[in-house]
Length: 170
Image (cartoon, one colour):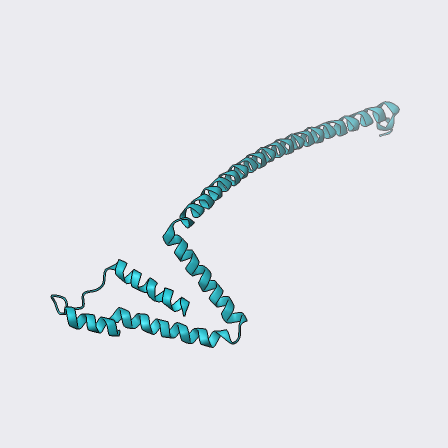
């Protein structure tokens, strides 16, 4: 047993042990190097995907900006039509009415009564129970099947325009 601890054996033991540690360290180095390479490929893939997503987002943003501009021009063009102008004016007046109802305390009851009176008048005209329509029905008679002959849409529209115009003047 004494001859196993001679300087030569001790050197060999140390050399073998060093070689084992060297192999282990090289194995760990190659393993770490492989992981580093894998991380680099993951990073480059992620950067490529992010760049592609950024490009797609920019394309989508420019497409939406163009579509927004197109829609803005279309809205402006449609607002220039006379019937759309009237609808827009009606919307403005409706919003102004709501604002006045909220902010002007004495305005609301009078306004609501005027609106209900106007609504009753329009409903009476539409059902044919207003005085001018009663006279017109007696003079002209009824339709072929005993029903009322309705006014054409244009005449009804002109009549309602006249009533709203006269209502707004008073």
